[in-house]
Amino acid sequence: MKYVLGVGTNMGERMNNIERCIDSINLTPYTDVLICSAVYETEPVGYARQQNFYNCALLVESELEPNEMLGLCLGIESGFGRKRGFANGPRILDIDLLLAEGVCKETRNLTVPHPEIRKRRFVLLPMLDIFPDGKAFGYEFASYIDKIEGQRCEKIKEKKDYYL
Image 1 (cartoon, rainbow, N blue to C red):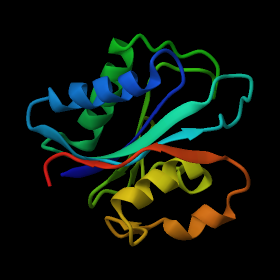
Image 2: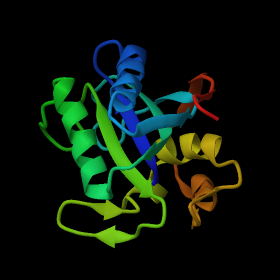
Image 3: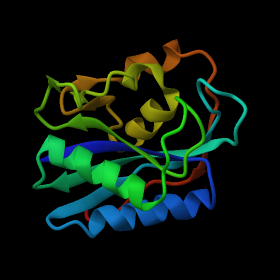
Image 4: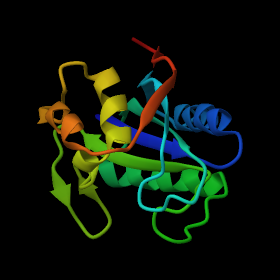
C-alpha cells in the first residue's frame, strides 16, 4: 500500500530531523520512502510565537495497514523525543498520515484523508511536488492551494527520488 505522509519540524537541527525521520521509516521492514518532496520553510499556523517549520511530504510504500502506519509515525515521533504540549505548539517532529491509497476511513484514532489537508499550504505544496497533476490516489487537492490566505512557504531543498 502507498501512503502520503506529511513531516514537519521546528526544533533543533530541522533538516537533520527530516533526514533522520526518513532513515527511521526506511528501517521499518517492508517499508520504503519512494519520494521526498522539496523541503519548505513555512510560517507556523495556529500559534505564531515559535520558530518557522521545515515541512515536506513523503510518498511511502509499505505492507503496514493504516493503523499500523499511524503507530509507526507516532513511535518515530516519540523516539525523537516529541512531547505533546499544546495544540500547534513547537515540536521536534510531527508526522501526519495524510493519505492512504484506496482508503477512506474515520475512526476515533485515525481519519484518512487527513481532515486538515485542504487548509494547509505547507501540506499541499509538498504534495504537488510528488503529484504534479494535483491528484493523489484519486484525491484532488491542487485547487485548494490558491484558496488559502497567508501561510508563506519557501522552497529550501529540492525534491529527492529514492527508489523510482
